[in-house]
Length: 533
Figure 1 (tube, helix red, strand yellow):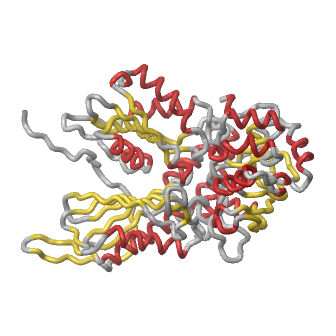
Figure 2: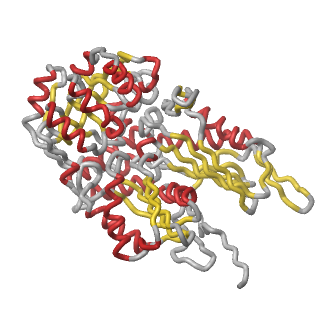
Figure 3: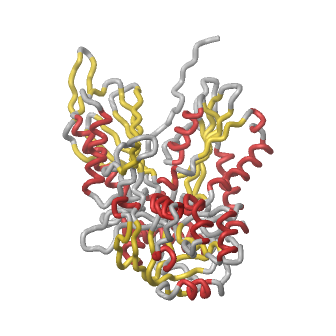
């Protein structure tokens, strides 16, 4: 048999629109007959800083067009249109450069391909990290990275470092980059399933996809760019392909395989999976057609005894941006600077929401909510307590020690969130909801002690939460995941820290909200919106 080697991921073209940052920091030097692209490492710093800055506040034009398509689609539900319109409004606010599109400004990830004729003379990871550091220090972004001091002691790094930086070698004289700002909610919805040859038939694959789509749920802020990868020479190769495919990096792969084992897109299965997503009725967070904007199905080679299958998403904050360094200079992908052009001239028509005064006693608020069925759209006004993972753990420690539940947790609804930095002159930084499911383990005990009676966050929850709400008379309200900038600009009037100040973005806060949008997801009778899908 003849030796065969082929680029395992043969991207056939790059139709990305780039803008030049600078012609500085690059020069051509001769080494014998070879031209070497010499890059001053300060150029890496500049590229990373510009890329993470742009991707935190702007989105791709193609992504925004897909949101507009939802509003224009007569088959979209009112809930689909409501979410899409909110996300377009949010994009317009974020593009002004003060409030990032999502409060979870993410883990900074860099995937790079360095040509054999590119020379920096430095630790490239260090200089890329310097650029990332600069952006997170200068802009109104959130520090989300927690570093271990010992097995169980952790602290916030205070810089959003470390970043994930993966650099690969390639032929040529160019340095190519994919930068991502990956939020926790989206990253947490990456799944690996170790399957076998028995999956690889029409019936089994269809059944598998219909079942596993439910694992994604809505906590990662749909509509999604969904990636399904079948095969891989290892589990880690499979999941790396999932992340790149969800970012659109593999859009220009071939559409058929060959004996070299090249990766390819399966266009037929992409349409089939998209149809399954539409038929799921999960929709753009609160029911409908648009669970996913689009689907990428990538087929890879595999070991005969293994068939890894990866499933993942890029969320409504689709923060992916390419960069490159060539002999002509340093370039970054051009993102959309004018999202307003995608907004319709008039908002989509929706039934008027129910207004809820949060400054009344808790019993009165619960009685008011009890009048309405699940899926009711609400407009909240008054006081919310903000607490997420570490604050919940701290309060549980108090209860375990025999101490009382803090009064603020009993007197006010709790909003699961953690803000980005506050721009000068504004009451709040970007402040959207975090994933509710991470707090599920606390709900029954907290409600038993009179706390967490009304919870506000994003995504579906466990049966245990439904049972607790039925037993203790509680409610879970869903907020739209994604439009964190517009919530900060239009709906949050005041923010103050009331407990655990040392926890930074995880501290307990009291906020005052006006016309804050929400839906009844789980009620005091045991009904749950997502359970009916």
